Amino acid sequence: MSDSQHFDVIIIGGSYSGLSAAMTLGRSLRSVLIIDSGLPCNRQTPHSHNFLTQDGVPPHEIASIGKRQVERYETIQFLNDFAVSGIKTKNGFEIKTAKNQNFKASKLIFATGIKDLMPKIKGFSDCWGISVVHCPYCHGYEIRNKKTGIIANGDVAFHLAPMAKNLTENLTILTNGKATFNPEQLSKLRKNNITIIEKEIIEIEHDNGHIKNVVFKDNSKAHFEATYAAIPFEQHSDIPETLGCELNEQGYIQVDMMNKTTIENVFACGDNCTRIRSVANAISSGNMVGAIINMELSNEHF
Picture 1: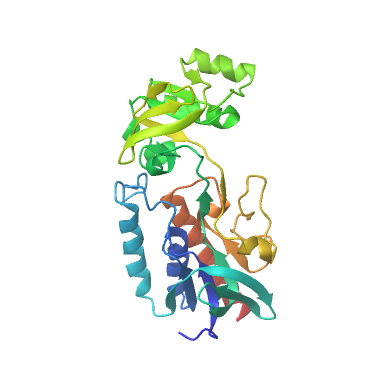
Picture 2: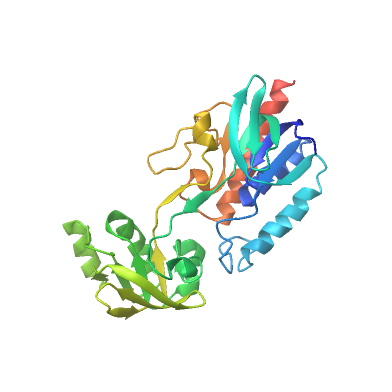
């Protein structure tokens, strides 16, 4: 593949949303380059759930099936590399990769996802996506009726509490420090018999990612079979911001109803632009982006 080649669309990120956008574009005969480094954020998660026809299938299997299907479209090319920079040009955009290759396109899709920022708690990252999970819709059914924790504080913990309580009666909030609930929130938590532990967490004891105990700074322990956790994140790629794409107050790429960013001809889909973090939503948003871009290209050349 020549690094001087010009594509209709460059897709940065080749997981679910990127593959979905590529399929739609490939079926419309658009020339597409997918740049992907092969490190999806859910690579440690054993099973994907709440996705019709693929419920319980390992995430990597879903992605592999998707890639094989997208590869059938002859106008789509894959590049195993990492996009490191991007600039606006007279006729579109130019992307440079870690392997010092340069590619041009009329339109860009960022399907780059987000990077979870793990807390400095021993064992936390080993359990992430296995028994320390982020979403009751993706994982809640599998941990129903178990002794469950919520590692979060304030409004975030309170947001998770009703959905977690729907799935288990044995629920504890671990604030990892002084609780920041307001009086009304505290009243509701007490009414629902939800325990609050305000101790600082130093370790999660586990067996191959399956939580056993949460260890606190005073060396006391509490046994749990699973926990939810809300942790901070950052964008996996800084190229959207360098191009001028705005982020919203939560840190996601700002998009409109058509997944257009604040920069013309730049689109985003998947986890990088929404709190709805699921395989099903990523595929849906990628499909939307592919259709919108094809419509724009068709109209531009009509």
